[in-house]
Length: 90
Ligand SMILES: [Zn+2]
Image 1 (cartoon, helix red, strand yellow):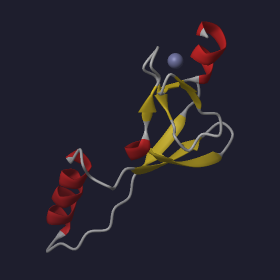
Image 2 (spheres, rainbow, N blue to C red):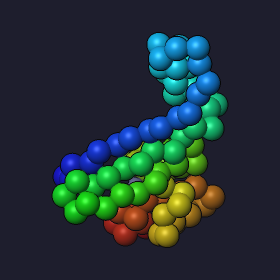
Image 3 (spheres, rainbow, N blue to C red):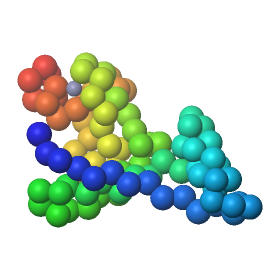
């Protein structure tokens, strides 16, 4: 298992810092929010990835999250399948 630093940034116009934080919290809790891009830094290797969880899809077998930006996307009967399940279940 790797260790990651996950950060999320948002710019807001607010009357004071507390209002800015409250607005950011509201945006983050909104399920329809478009602010779904996280920067995920693998601290062991120092690699950063931009992950958009708004575009996530789940594996039909294990329900593991599959990044739709991933190069290795497997589709089985119209559903997404993660690489592990693709290799061992199909
Ligand atoms: Zn799977």
